Image 1 (spheres, rainbow, N blue to C red):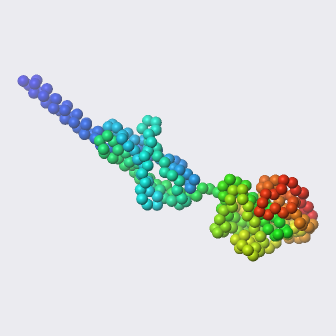
Image 2: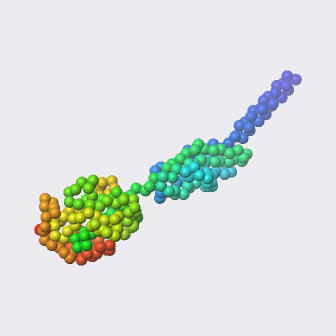
Image 3: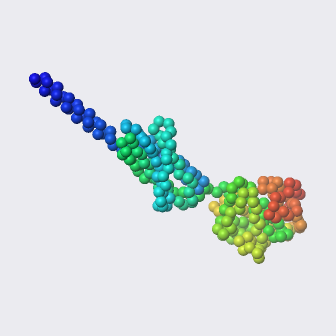
Length: 278
């Protein structure tokens, strides 16, 4: 009789343990290792969010929920990858946008799990000013041409042209926000005392018959190229007259400075003559 009672009690204990274990497994899925790339997000980037999701009962769905600048929520179905990983993509956003997101997982018993909220702020893509070129200086029309030899637009705000040996605080011309950008493979022409467009108006001093120096600088003050005709110790003094030719990079945008017929606002010729330095 005692043996029978002990067996019955043991069976009940085991049954209770089994029920407790079953109840333990009826909780939410486990979401871990939620990461996003790239870590530094620009306006050109889609953001990929990857999460590891596990559940003993089985995962039925994993969703990525995000908001932009605290606006309405957008939901994206995440795709299962290798092992227990799931991924989803947040599309590219505007400069300075703040994006917050969570990962939500559902399991077979219908209990949702939500990850800790994460966020990132979008920054403008870095500008490659190296493709902005001082391309032509024309003493006849009193103008300077800048050329973008790259494949993306370059903003002109803060870009400077420095004449002779003046410092950065006294530029011959400086771009402002209203100048916008110079398009890929595009030109702008800045004219001395331009009466038609103040945004493309430089100070006085361009000449076809003087010692002359111009330096192009990026918005950060980095030199993007220097033109020098004559002796730097005699800047502003008269030497030989090069009119009606202008000073140009030949080949266009990449070559050395030569003399050629003016091509303001368009591609420079393939050939030119040496520039007299006296």
